[in-house]
Amino acid sequence: MKKSGKIILCCCFFCLMVLAMMPAALAQVALKQGASGNEVFMLQTKLKEIGYYQGEADGAFGSGTRSAVINFQLDCGLTADGIVGTQTWQALRDYRVSDTSRGQVDRRLGQRIAGYAQNFYGVPYVWAGRSPSGFDCSGFVSYVFAQNGVSLPRMADEQYNVGMWVNRADLQPGDLVFFSTYEAGASHVGIYIGNGQFVHASSGAGQVVSTSLYSQYYQARYLGARRVA
Image (cartoon, rainbow, N blue to C red; front, side, top):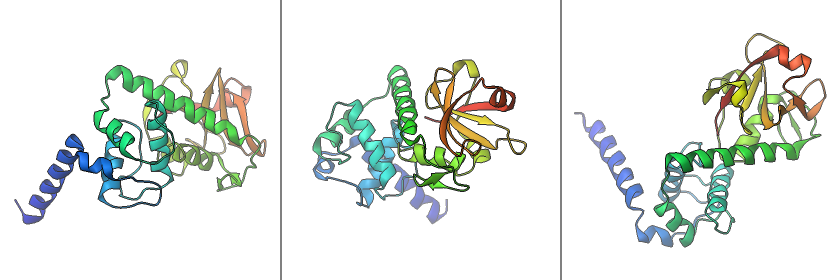
Protein backbone atom coordinates (compact mmCIF):
# COMPACT_ATOMS: atom_id res chain seq x y z
CA MET A 1 0.00 0.00 0.00
CA LYS A 2 1.25 3.50 -0.83
CA LYS A 3 2.10 5.88 1.99
CA SER A 4 -0.81 8.21 1.05
CA GLY A 5 -3.24 5.29 1.29
CA LYS A 6 -1.97 4.43 4.78
CA ILE A 7 -2.41 8.03 5.88
CA ILE A 8 -6.02 8.14 4.64
CA LEU A 9 -6.84 4.85 6.40
CA CYS A 10 -5.30 6.13 9.65
CA CYS A 11 -7.33 9.37 9.45
CA CYS A 12 -10.57 7.47 8.80
CA PHE A 13 -9.87 5.10 11.70
CA PHE A 14 -9.13 8.03 14.00
CA CYS A 15 -12.40 9.79 13.10
CA LEU A 16 -14.43 6.61 13.65
CA MET A 17 -12.82 6.06 17.04
CA VAL A 18 -13.49 9.64 18.11
CA LEU A 19 -17.12 9.51 17.00
CA ALA A 20 -17.68 6.22 18.80
CA MET A 21 -16.20 7.48 22.05
CA MET A 22 -17.20 11.19 22.00
CA PRO A 23 -14.80 11.75 24.93
CA ALA A 24 -15.83 13.75 27.96
CA ALA A 25 -13.17 16.37 27.17
CA LEU A 26 -15.04 17.24 23.98
CA ALA A 27 -18.15 17.98 26.00
CA GLN A 28 -16.32 20.96 27.45
CA VAL A 29 -16.00 22.60 24.01
CA ALA A 30 -18.92 24.92 23.28
CA LEU A 31 -19.49 25.44 19.57
CA LYS A 32 -21.70 27.95 17.78
CA GLN A 33 -22.12 29.49 14.34
CA GLY A 34 -18.84 30.93 13.11
CA ALA A 35 -16.69 28.28 14.80
CA SER A 36 -14.39 26.06 12.75
CA GLY A 37 -11.96 23.22 13.20
CA ASN A 38 -11.80 19.52 14.01
CA GLU A 39 -14.47 19.72 16.74
CA VAL A 40 -16.96 21.16 14.22
CA PHE A 41 -16.02 18.42 11.73
CA MET A 42 -16.77 15.75 14.34
CA LEU A 43 -20.04 17.48 15.24
CA GLN A 44 -21.14 17.54 11.60
CA THR A 45 -20.14 13.91 11.08
CA LYS A 46 -22.16 12.81 14.11
CA LEU A 47 -25.18 14.84 12.99
CA LYS A 48 -24.93 13.24 9.53
CA GLU A 49 -24.70 9.79 11.10
CA ILE A 50 -27.98 10.25 12.97
CA GLY A 51 -29.81 11.92 10.08
CA TYR A 52 -29.92 15.58 11.07
CA TYR A 53 -27.30 17.08 8.78
CA GLN A 54 -27.07 16.46 5.04
CA GLY A 55 -24.39 18.96 4.09
CA GLU A 56 -20.66 18.44 3.71
CA ALA A 57 -18.66 17.82 6.87
CA ASP A 58 -16.21 20.64 6.21
CA GLY A 59 -15.37 21.80 9.73
CA ALA A 60 -17.12 25.17 9.27
CA PHE A 61 -20.10 25.89 11.57
CA GLY A 62 -22.49 27.67 9.21
CA SER A 63 -26.26 28.21 9.11
CA GLY A 64 -26.91 24.65 7.90
CA THR A 65 -25.03 23.17 10.85
CA ARG A 66 -26.85 25.52 13.24
CA SER A 67 -30.25 24.45 11.84
CA ALA A 68 -29.29 20.79 12.27
CA VAL A 69 -28.22 21.42 15.87
CA ILE A 70 -31.47 23.26 16.66
CA ASN A 71 -33.59 20.44 15.19
CA PHE A 72 -31.62 17.88 17.22
CA GLN A 73 -32.04 19.95 20.38
CA LEU A 74 -35.79 20.29 19.80
CA ASP A 75 -36.18 16.53 19.38
CA CYS A 76 -34.16 15.87 22.55
CA GLY A 77 -36.03 18.39 24.70
CA LEU A 78 -32.98 20.65 25.06
CA THR A 79 -32.80 24.44 24.84
CA ALA A 80 -32.89 25.04 21.09
CA ASP A 81 -30.27 27.78 20.85
CA GLY A 82 -28.06 26.24 18.17
CA ILE A 83 -25.11 26.23 20.56
CA VAL A 84 -23.40 22.91 21.25
CA GLY A 85 -22.57 22.95 24.94
CA THR A 86 -22.17 20.23 27.56
CA GLN A 87 -25.77 18.96 27.45
CA THR A 88 -25.91 18.83 23.66
CA TRP A 89 -22.56 17.02 23.43
CA GLN A 90 -23.82 14.49 25.98
CA ALA A 91 -27.07 13.97 24.07
CA LEU A 92 -25.12 13.45 20.85
CA ARG A 93 -22.86 10.90 22.52
CA ASP A 94 -25.80 8.96 23.94
CA TYR A 95 -28.09 9.21 20.90
CA ARG A 96 -28.99 5.95 19.15
CA VAL A 97 -31.16 5.66 16.03
CA SER A 98 -33.44 2.65 15.75
CA ASP A 99 -35.38 1.98 12.56
CA THR A 100 -38.55 3.23 14.23
CA SER A 101 -37.05 6.39 15.73
CA ARG A 102 -35.23 7.20 12.47
CA GLY A 103 -38.57 7.08 10.64
CA GLN A 104 -40.08 9.39 13.25
CA VAL A 105 -37.15 11.80 12.95
CA ASP A 106 -37.47 11.81 9.16
CA ARG A 107 -41.20 12.57 9.37
CA ARG A 108 -40.64 15.37 11.86
CA LEU A 109 -37.96 16.87 9.64
CA GLY A 110 -40.26 16.70 6.62
CA GLN A 111 -43.03 18.39 8.59
CA ARG A 112 -40.67 21.13 9.73
CA ILE A 113 -39.53 21.73 6.16
CA ALA A 114 -43.14 21.89 4.93
CA GLY A 115 -44.06 24.29 7.72
CA TYR A 116 -41.02 26.48 7.18
CA ALA A 117 -41.66 26.71 3.44
CA GLN A 118 -45.07 28.24 4.09
CA ASN A 119 -43.46 31.26 5.75
CA PHE A 120 -42.59 32.56 2.29
CA TYR A 121 -46.03 32.93 0.73
CA GLY A 122 -46.08 36.08 -1.35
CA VAL A 123 -42.32 36.34 -1.90
CA PRO A 124 -41.93 37.41 -5.54
CA TYR A 125 -40.85 35.03 -8.27
CA VAL A 126 -37.44 36.06 -9.62
CA TRP A 127 -35.65 34.11 -12.35
CA ALA A 128 -32.52 32.52 -10.79
CA GLY A 129 -33.55 33.95 -7.41
CA ARG A 130 -32.53 32.04 -4.32
CA SER A 131 -33.12 34.34 -1.35
CA PRO A 132 -36.16 35.70 0.50
CA SER A 133 -36.00 38.80 -1.68
CA GLY A 134 -37.00 36.61 -4.64
CA PHE A 135 -37.02 32.93 -5.63
CA ASP A 136 -37.30 30.76 -8.67
CA CYS A 137 -38.67 27.24 -8.09
CA SER A 138 -35.43 25.36 -7.46
CA GLY A 139 -33.86 28.30 -5.64
CA PHE A 140 -36.81 28.29 -3.25
CA VAL A 141 -36.51 24.56 -2.60
CA SER A 142 -32.73 24.61 -2.08
CA TYR A 143 -33.02 27.61 0.27
CA VAL A 144 -35.77 26.06 2.41
CA PHE A 145 -33.92 22.76 2.74
CA ALA A 146 -30.59 24.48 3.49
CA GLN A 147 -32.21 26.40 6.35
CA ASN A 148 -33.23 23.03 7.77
CA GLY A 149 -29.77 21.49 7.49
CA VAL A 150 -30.24 19.67 4.18
CA SER A 151 -28.00 20.50 1.22
CA LEU A 152 -29.54 20.13 -2.24
CA PRO A 153 -28.27 20.81 -5.76
CA ARG A 154 -29.31 24.18 -7.19
CA MET A 155 -31.27 23.13 -10.29
CA ALA A 156 -34.58 21.23 -10.50
CA ASP A 157 -33.26 18.55 -12.87
CA GLU A 158 -30.37 17.89 -10.45
CA GLN A 159 -32.70 17.80 -7.43
CA TYR A 160 -34.74 15.20 -9.30
CA ASN A 161 -31.85 12.75 -8.93
CA VAL A 162 -31.49 13.13 -5.14
CA GLY A 163 -33.14 10.99 -2.45
CA MET A 164 -35.56 8.12 -2.94
CA TRP A 165 -38.55 7.71 -5.23
CA VAL A 166 -41.98 8.18 -3.67
CA ASN A 167 -45.32 7.12 -5.11
CA ARG A 168 -47.90 9.87 -5.29
CA ALA A 169 -50.15 7.91 -2.95
CA ASP A 170 -47.35 7.79 -0.34
CA LEU A 171 -46.42 11.47 -0.32
CA GLN A 172 -45.55 13.02 3.05
CA PRO A 173 -44.94 16.67 3.99
CA GLY A 174 -41.45 17.72 2.96
CA ASP A 175 -41.29 15.50 -0.14
CA LEU A 176 -40.21 17.13 -3.39
CA VAL A 177 -42.68 17.05 -6.29
CA PHE A 178 -41.52 17.57 -9.86
CA PHE A 179 -43.20 18.63 -13.07
CA SER A 180 -42.31 18.90 -16.72
CA THR A 181 -43.41 22.42 -17.65
CA TYR A 182 -41.53 24.74 -19.99
CA GLU A 183 -39.15 22.01 -21.17
CA ALA A 184 -38.91 18.22 -21.13
CA GLY A 185 -37.77 16.60 -17.91
CA ALA A 186 -37.84 18.03 -14.40
CA SER A 187 -38.19 21.77 -15.07
CA HIS A 188 -40.35 22.73 -12.06
CA VAL A 189 -40.23 21.64 -8.42
CA GLY A 190 -42.19 22.29 -5.23
CA ILE A 191 -42.49 21.01 -1.65
CA TYR A 192 -45.44 18.83 -0.70
CA ILE A 193 -47.23 20.16 2.41
CA GLY A 194 -50.07 17.64 2.77
CA ASN A 195 -53.72 17.35 1.73
CA GLY A 196 -52.78 17.21 -1.96
CA GLN A 197 -51.11 20.64 -1.81
CA PHE A 198 -47.57 21.75 -2.61
CA VAL A 199 -45.82 25.09 -2.09
CA HIS A 200 -43.65 26.51 -4.86
CA ALA A 201 -42.28 29.63 -6.47
CA SER A 202 -44.62 30.00 -9.42
CA SER A 203 -43.68 32.05 -12.47
CA GLY A 204 -47.35 32.06 -13.49
CA ALA A 205 -48.54 33.45 -10.16
CA GLY A 206 -45.45 35.64 -9.87
CA GLN A 207 -44.84 34.62 -6.26
CA VAL A 208 -44.59 31.75 -3.78
CA VAL A 209 -48.01 30.06 -3.54
CA SER A 210 -49.59 26.72 -2.68
CA THR A 211 -51.34 24.74 -5.39
CA SER A 212 -53.24 21.47 -5.65
CA LEU A 213 -51.36 18.58 -7.22
CA TYR A 214 -54.65 17.73 -8.87
CA SER A 215 -55.21 21.04 -10.58
CA GLN A 216 -55.60 20.48 -14.31
CA TYR A 217 -52.29 22.10 -15.26
CA TYR A 218 -50.06 20.35 -12.72
CA GLN A 219 -51.76 16.98 -12.79
CA ALA A 220 -51.10 16.79 -16.54
CA ARG A 221 -47.43 17.69 -16.04
CA TYR A 222 -46.64 15.70 -12.90
CA LEU A 223 -43.35 13.85 -13.27
CA GLY A 224 -42.67 12.24 -9.89
CA ALA A 225 -41.59 12.78 -6.29
CA ARG A 226 -38.45 12.31 -4.24
CA ARG A 227 -37.95 12.04 -0.49
CA VAL A 228 -34.79 13.73 0.72
CA ALA A 229 -35.63 14.54 4.36
